[in-house]
Length: 290
Image (cartoon, rainbow, N blue to C red):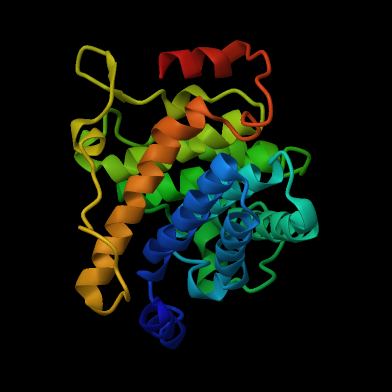
């Protein structure tokens, strides 16, 4: 029962902390999609789509603020999975509508960050319009979020005339992130979403996004603080009430983000459950390396 959380979100739509919660419905959407791929039950696919739709349709609760880039990136990766399912039955029109909505959101949010649009449109607030002319933040989380957003925009909208500018800005931001960022594993998870965006769209990963954590000697490793993550909720929860329960839900959703971004989607890229095509090039070597 998420009613208490939903009420709080709608009562405080401009809260800067709202983007952090969106990893919960998006992680649940991916979990139900995993279940659908395992047992092909229509109700699992329906719930996955509904959760992703909820995020897209309620952009006013999380968009156009610091941290929204990570939400856009996660939403786009989720939509990429849904769009490449073997069969979505009667849900194909919903998936397409969701994809179009996600791409529109991605373009607007990327414009606000990169300053590639001629004006601010849609539901973007004026402070988001100013984001393109004020200095970039120095906090690693904010930089990683913006880099992931621009990577998603460049990857999933490759025919857009702004795509080259989005890609260049994404690389600039990624290059400013600390390397071997074990001190902030969430930064590396968001950066890994940027890597995934390039790969899932059939492109090559720019070197600025790296290949994972590195030791002082240059050896690629998984960050201990991230690889040791495990779910903190001890069992089934009837209702999420209060800050403590919500914090646990958000932290557990980040475990799903870590597994998807660093493990699952490298082994099982979208569409791979339909058939086993021959994989070549950078994507193949990246999967073998993982």
